[in-house]
Image (tube, rainbow, N blue to C red; front, side, top):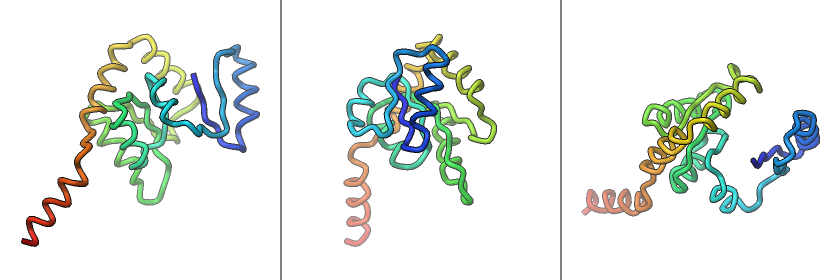
Amino acid sequence: MEHQTGEADYQRVVDSYKVAGFNNVRVEKFIYDMDRAFREAHLVVCRAGASSLAELAAAGKAAVLIPLVSKDRHQEHNAVEIEHVGGALSRLQGSLTGESLAAILKDLYNNPERIQSLAHQMGKLHHPNAAHAIAQSILAKQA
């Protein structure tokens, strides 16, 4: 397992894993080689911003999405849509605890077929030529 913490939470997270007896966790302040991290991951726990979702779709990775709380709730809307099509599970930050997240992860760990299904559905959302198709559509309407 790999866990990106940011600068502020790094030592607290390292200490928490040690106390819990998790010795095979790679804790990083920041993951500089995201290609490697995505390649090695079976499941990603992350926010639900547009860039994160595009990366998950391109990599075909299952996810547990925890939308960033914001006034316009855009990440929450993103997460609901992705969950609706079966590409991820979504949980609101305010209703999530360490214990409830651990239960979700344990359930997924014990159901690899579910992870594969989520990954497959997430991968179906990837459209590598989307920008070209949009540009062609705009140009066709101008002609």
